[in-house]
Length: 367
Ligand SMILES: Cc1ncc(COP(=O)(O)O)c(C=O)c1O
Image 1 (cartoon, rainbow, N blue to C red):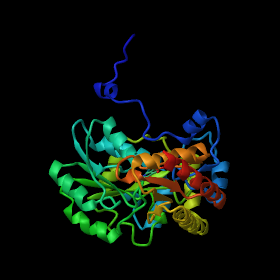
Image 2 (cartoon, helix red, strand yellow; image 1 turned 180 degrees about the horizontal axis):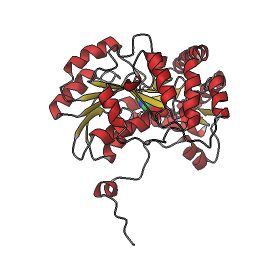
Image 3 (cartoon, rainbow, N blue to C red; image 1 turned 135 degrees about the horizontal axis):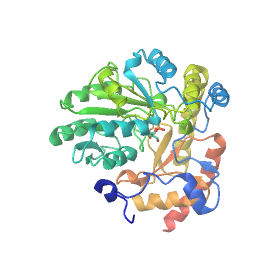
Image 4 (cartoon, rainbow, N blue to C red; image 1 turned 90 degrees about the vertical axis):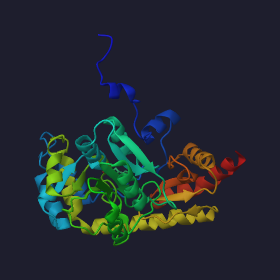
């Protein structure tokens, strides 16, 4: 056999991942990063209770394909019904299921230009046609997104609140008002990955069963469990039931399920970590200002720093940081790409960033 019979769509797609992982960069640089501040992980880690639960897990057993205990705990936590919730392999996995359920070749889908790219990757994988709406003043623009959805008869519109890569956010009340513009027949995927680190009032204040929206949450950010791959979608029961048509039934590993249960229960640890993330945001902003740069206000676990020039300049700053052992990332698209994006780190991580930034800037200015 000389030719695999891939679908024409698969043949047309590049073999890629939306991000180059820090591990790949470390292999290329032949060194380990001193500070891993590029992937919006939570360096403060999971609750010790979650760590103990994951260590005690019987790995020889499959996870419960219904994630029953975790869904029950999440339902109680959110004042929702279990039928409102499906657990999956992180938001990334759930976005894949959503797209698989909704998107056929040529279907119109709307997102922001430069928004979280994993969604786009899934849409491309099912042959959807992406329509991209520009950011407005470094914010995703719900009104423009919903107007575009009406114009192209989109099946899905994707919006992250707070946003990655800029860290900006809308109040839940403003978003609920904007949803009056959401056309009939368009479903809003509201990615609330960072809502736990956002000010009170950022979450969408609508009924969990509102059929116009599905909300995505994760244990990867404030709960510090990115490597365990636990996320969940909350929406109307009819929509949640549809996930069971396509999802990977043993995709959830038992350790992740049990760790997430403990992480959710350990409210003291959670509160403490959210406070540490806030302190780190302030420190990153301070380091930026000390170097004459402008930090953007952030509700997420990272801060976008405006480097004050174009994308090429920000890329030189980024490269200078990377060669000095500081892993950071930057937005892909202008004008957001005038920024670098720095994830919250430990005080030691941020000391290393503070030491490297002036040198990286000096080199970047030399061109
Ligand atoms: C907006 C947004 N959504 C989803 C994710 C990924 O979440 P998960 O780890 O649950 O797949 C990220 C991670 O950076 C993100 O920034």
